[in-house]
Figure (cartoon, rainbow, N blue to C red):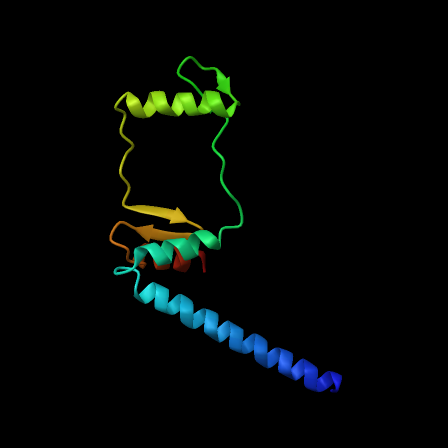
Length: 114
């Protein structure tokens, strides 16, 4: 098999893979309201890193580095009855997701950049 034929077949296979991936992602986006679990699992799989909390500053101003100390501080926070503020939009993996699962905020932000 010649190099040119191999290159053409490789490009064709790459194009088919891109089309299949785009079709899969489009179907995930279409079904996000009925199948949230699959959508967010796929988005999580595309994450390039794991976020690790810390270091934390406790109420007395000390900096906590050890995982056990940070977990104890988290437990104190959650058990004390503090409630986090609710948000209408959040940026996850570069995509703005609103509480009603619409992409209007994401599109608006993307248009501002262009």
